Length: 163
Image (cartoon, rainbow, N blue to C red; front, side, top):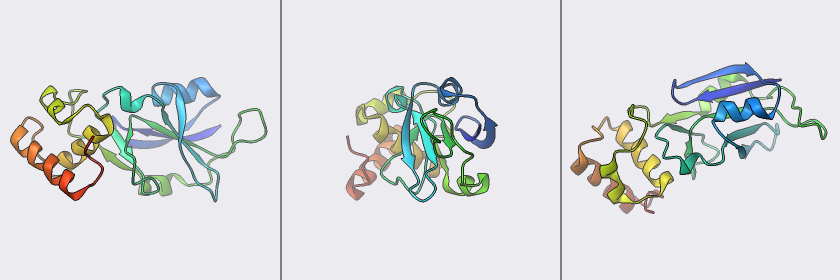
């Protein structure tokens, strides 16, 4: 079956073939959960259900879920057919998905949020949002005073960064 794999480490989205649940779990790096389903097409985006708990620093966003940054990889499949778990090809094209996905966390190569950032809280989503903004502004992650200023600015704007 055809799917689109959102690989956040490589910052690539590619067409892949999968044969079942084990392949989907391998692509996202854990147990899958539905992150979003497009009502018109019934295409389904799966992510790692524990992605926000794994202290991942790479993720992505889609405009249909502005409230949520997804930590780790994702995979898009078409709608389910019957009770078998099989899906049809996604109705969305690869180009349409590429236009929707915004990668976050791309400057962090260490694989974890700097421990100095934990003074801002332990909420993984909040740290991922902060990381996205720090990366967008090309701020060095170890510039804690500037990172703190960004944290405070985001908090004042009420962008869902506060834990």
